[in-house]
View: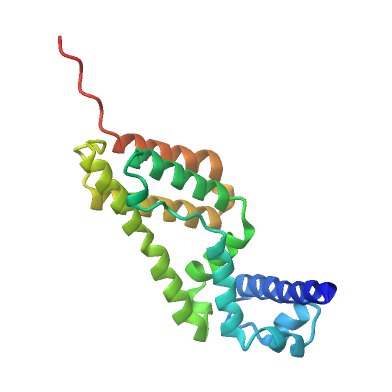
Length: 209
């Protein structure tokens, strides 16, 4: 029984990997259930044993990428900490994990870059894009907390800082995936993150003389 369960899960993962690769390479609209099954070395019956249809496997692909993501701590969990340090560490970790995780990279590219190739799956992709966009709200909550603690530079407001941070993170990931040879993702990306957070930090007042 144990081997049967393991074999079933291996079959499911093979189909999922095949679908992800095909959606990435040729677009979801141009990929059929038969294409997925053949690429996985399986039958169409095996596909339907695990997934209702192409939309179902697309949704599982998104859920797999989501499960690998880091969760930003809620403001209620950071009352005794430094919200800017927490947010900086989170963004750094997200970036470092992303550049090493092929699953997240492909899922991101499929949802963000291949809109014209999604066909009937576009509504599911739009839901994912909306979800990703909402991360900027989490950024803003921590930046608001930093402002209340006197940690945010007066040159920034939480909404503008959150929008800038979100745009930078998305832009770095997007441009690197489109043309990885343009820059060293880890070195340049982390430098961008750190320089932006340095600008968020309120400079300490000069000592009285």
